[in-house]
Amino acid sequence: MNLAKLEQKRLKLSRKTNSAKKSSLGQFLTPQKTAEFMASLFPDGCGHCRLLDAGAGIGSLSAAFLDRWVDGEFRFHNIEVDAFEVDQDLIEALSETLSNYSLDNNLTSKIYQEDFIHAAADSLSGNLFSTPLEPYTHVILNPPYKKISSRSAHRLALRRVGIETVNLYSAFVALAVALTASEGQIVAIIPRSFCNGPYYRPFRDFILERSAIRHIHLFESRSQAFKDDDVLQENIIIRLERDGQPESVTISTSTDDSFSDLTIQEHPFDRIIFPDDLERFIHIPTTTEKSVIELSPTVRYSLAELGIQVSTGPVVDFRLKAHLRDNPEPGTVPLIYPGHLANGYVVWPKPELKKPNAIMRNKETEKWLYPNGFYCVVRRFSSKEEKRRVIASVISPAIFGYESLLGFENHLNLFHENKHGLPETLVHGLSTFLNTTAVDEYFRRFNGHTQVNATDLRQMKYPSRSALIELGQWAMEQQDLTQAQIDAKLDTLTT
Image (cartoon, rainbow, N blue to C red):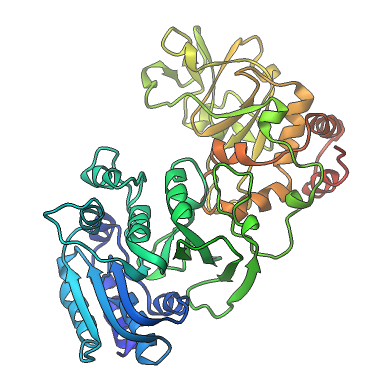
């Protein structure tokens, strides 16, 4: 088939479909070059092929896969295609795409105009009233991206087959893995957000217990994978092998979906998922050289070993709205938002912030407050324009005078010791370490979004407590610290 004509059809449909409908379905049609690249990731195959394309759209992914077969790159005797698509406006185009290949007697295709999650869950759970889906040898996916409510029909269907996840895209991939035959290949373009954080831990466990990662492609630009739809989301392309054993992983990168500057590297599996990481964060190194953090003999302690905890700020403002005050008044205590932080320290109060500066102290709020003291805080969110993901600041009790308690808003991560402050030098050392370029680069390798979770910070390694205190003493003695000074000092730390 002429993929260029199919691409013109995709562009026309994309322009014609309003953004509200795209958002409601969470589905964005796959550009031609991306589809061709995804199809190219499958190893050669022979025998009988059963291909699943769930969320098929107009069939761009199936067409790219079938074109490889038509061109003789696959040695399959015959192919069966199962395409799932719920958008009735796309069925005619999908049918036309697949029919162009059906002239070959060795190809059969079936379009399911039904919800893939329910169909797959029914098949996997052995529902006698559903159509059973035979195992697939190949899966190619551009699944929808949309959150799943905890009480939705989708969530209940997924739980029936042992899948716990929070988004349609991860649900589609998990179901695809479950439906794939041993040694079967799954290629999907999905958001990078599943690689870390607590919400996707069950999903990571599910796919890693049933498949091996063989290839990850990273787009360096956040806006290029689906640029025609103005999607600002960091996406990756991943290839999984059902029942595969962990081996080396191919990591490729390109600036955008033209793939014109494609680079390819091989990495051992233990650089993708660290052997001692119970959270199973998925790292995506972009260089074969190990990071400064990995190589440093001094950066090898967990927060638990240091006697330090990190928690999300407990004050959720919309839940405590009645107790918030724009400015301090009798009976209130300071409330700290990310907007109060500047140049590594806190500026409070800040009337121009357009956020409350204080919270009433009473029996309903007191359990959410911390004793005044020295704390290190990291903003949970950075803007896309900022150069750094991890931005740490020092909270000093002197700023708040005689106040005995402090409120930390939910958009902050807070380092503490049993819900109390830390020693001053330790706080300065911790903040300085977190603000090194090495930490930021390390963090960016596995965190593709702008959110910094407490779990992410908990999984990192740190210098020893004594080394952090040494670093803090040094930082406090400096007048104006430059990034170059901070980075150079990290190399001088001792164990």
